[in-house]
Structures are given as C-alpha cells and as structure tokens.
Length: 135
Image (cartoon, rainbow, N blue to C red; front, side, top):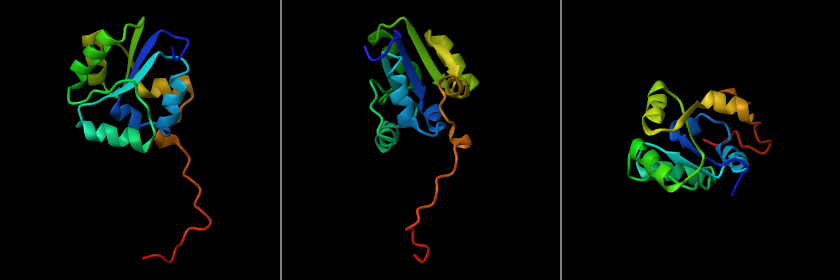
C-alpha cells in the first residue's frame, strides 16, 4: 500500500493543470492514498505529454476512453474504501456523483493538502546567467 488511507484518487487533467507543482502533488498524495492517477477527455498523448513533462508516475489514466468510462473502470479495478475525484467544475461534480465517486474541488484539495495553485504561485526568480541579448 502506498499510503495510510484505503483510497483511490483521480485528478481531472484540468484540475492537475491548476496546481503549481503537479509532481509534488502526486508525491504527496502517494503518502496517503493507495492509487492515484489522471482522467481526461483529451487525447492520450496530451495526458502523456503533461505527465512526462512533470515527471508524474500515475497508477492509471483514462487512455482513449472518456472520463465517465475511465472512472467506472478504475472503480472496478481498484477496490478501495474511497474513490475521490478532484475536478474543477459543476460538470465534474455531477460526473463524480453519477459514477459513485466522492467529488473534491481542486481549490479545496489544494487547501487541505497545502498545495499551491498555479495562479497563487510566486514567479520564478530569473537566472543570473540568463542572456538578454539573444534575439
């Protein structure tokens, strides 16, 4: 077991994109969940590119299926006490309810877990050796 809680945690890709450090989010979530992954309506390569760029190792992803079918499949495959879907909209809440998942808005998840939202993250410091004479 990855964490102390018997839980499967799924992030909608849009929710994950709202977080300042998605890789840290997955690292943290692994401390208190059994399984964590990403679902999206976007093509598989979009999710794969995002997770590779951020060095995210996920236990599951939606692949070519839609979010509803993916959440149903994950629920069947990963038998945990809780299944929590982190999303960004009322449509996400309705989807979670329809497939028997708990819904958690990304802002609430970030606050509870002490994750920074991308909009709230400080700007990175400029590198001192950065060239400003490049065209």
